[in-house]
Amino acid sequence: MPSKQTITRHPQCKPEPGEQPARQAITLQDKLRLLLISMSVFLCVLDLFIVNVAIPQIRQSMGGSTAESQFIIVLYVTGYGAFLVTGGKLGTRYGHKKIFQLALLAFMLCSLCCGLAQTPLQLNTGRLLQGISAAFMVPQGVALISGIFIQEAARSKALGIYGAIAGIASVLGQVLGGVLPALPLDFGAWRLIFLINIPIALGTVLAAAKLLPVIPARIQEPVQVRAQLVLIVLLVVFICQVVLAGEKGWTPVTALLISSTLAGLVLFIYRQYKQYRSGRNVLLNGAPFKYRSFRLAIAAAATYNLVQDAYFFINANYFQQGLRLGPAQTGMLFAFQGMGYVLASLCAVRYLYRYQERFMVSGLFLMIVCLLLHILFLNDGVVSPVTVAAILFFYGLGCGIVLPSMFTHAMHQLPAGVTPVASGIYLTAQQISIALGVSLLGRIYFQSGNGYYSATGAMIALLGITALIFCMGLYGAGRKRHTGTGVEAPDQNPCQV
Image 1 (cartoon, rainbow, N blue to C red):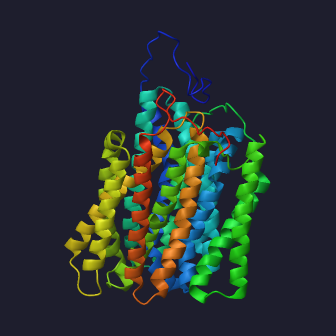
Image 2 (cartoon, rainbow, N blue to C red; image 1 turned 45 degrees about the vertical axis):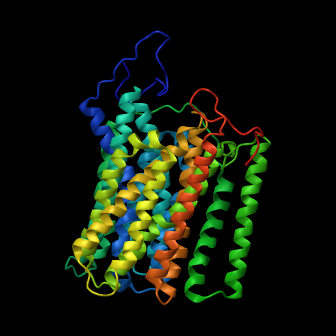
Image 3 (cartoon, rainbow, N blue to C red; image 1 turned 90 degrees about the vertical axis):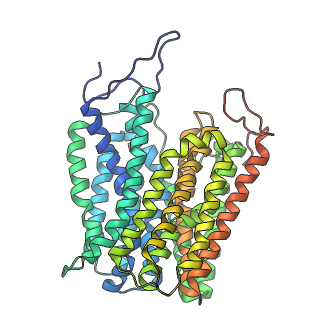
């Protein structure tokens, strides 16, 4: 029987032919371990959603431009998305438990820096580093779950709880983002949205040292340090210039920086592709792009996630500045959206496998209808809180149908050996798309005359494009070649991207 501190059996090992798999008993210690591991995704998601409602109070207290308020979200998700692949590789190389603890400590220190920041530059620098530290702690969570919960049924249940805690964090973040900044404190109550991370992270690190096992790595992938640094510099410069161009206009310097960094990103991806074809280790592995379903999933994720967090950023600002609602009331209203999301996501897997793309298109249709209701009912006049709560609840139902289903649908047709690489690429693309969405749609909201309606119209168009991509998947479903094992066969050209 494995010791409490070391697990030597590989998590994917299976029983011998003819042997009945033993049912893994979930002990109290396993439950405590799962709770500790889930604190990584809890803090990561909490700190994404908690700032949406609090941004108007941060800007009022600290000053700064609309671009600097966008950076609070944009830099966090950019740092998170850019380092996810490297974060996973570092865990396999140096140990998941060790990286989990170090990343939590780094996240705690970055949260402290954000909470003590005196200028927008200090705050946004802390947010970038906070996102990077989250990218190193979150991938370790899934790896630790796979090592602790060896039996498939137990592991599936643990992953379901892990995902549910992420959903709870999204709801709680929106509520706390409204309630905490409204507290009557002299030092700026909005700082509490960052400072509350400190006791959670510190307590998790101390408990993890005693309770979490050491999971031995099966493979040790080389970390692509130079490629990682090039990618983060290109992304940060490109996204920051897009945001600044929306506020200050297109100067020659801005145009030069945007065009040069965009060209640099294209060249970076091309070089990664060439190195992958030559058999070298790369940061962005091209293997998943052999599969048509994954290429469509990436395209759909790109358009959908342009909307996902931009919606919260824009509506949190509009509710407080346009509809003149208080931060606490705004946070409580967004809780209805979170409840709809959690409710739908709990049922999503059951219907996804039965209806495939049709199920996700239905969720997108519900979101589009709710956005139209935003335009019709959420105007500058007096609005009924009941009406707002109902619209947000049904919008949350649509999100809960689409968002978790997209990732599951993207992964389930791929061979098991491709899935880890594919999940890293998918989540990286997702976070970069979120950053661009907040940048571009935020620009429309702040700059145009009827900014809220223009931005909402753009969201409707992007969700419509996402639905068309899924319809392409429906069209090709009958023509896909399968291996006979339940997974999609790659394209005939093994190097096609």
